[in-house]
Length: 124
View 1 (spheres, rainbow, N blue to C red):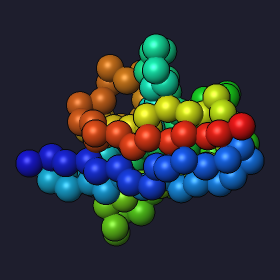
View 2 (view 1 turned 180 degrees about the horizontal axis):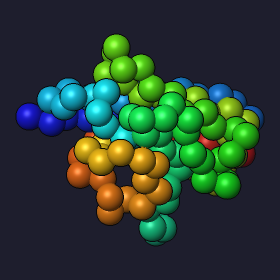
View 3 (view 1 turned 30 degrees about the horizontal axis):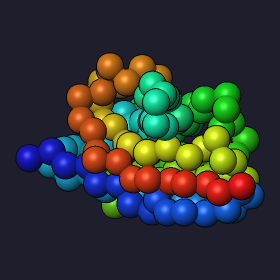
């Protein structure tokens, strides 16, 4: 059974840092491309960051580039999203996703597996 479980979301103040984690099970993690997406109330799901199982170099949305860092720990079957200089507009439910295909996937439709999401709220 495939399972992705996010953790680390909470209420923080603008300018704070926060690290999200996503633990995967039921999959060959080292062969997965992983992504982070977010969805704010009333808005569409938005790409945040992605990393391929072939290349360890992540790709980021312009809105988070320079503030967020995605990393993967294949030994621990985990991906992390380190977020710094958080802004109120970063408030959203953050979800991780996994794809069996190689490459950097910026479209949510390319992912087969999703976690339940974790709430990040940034107060001004």
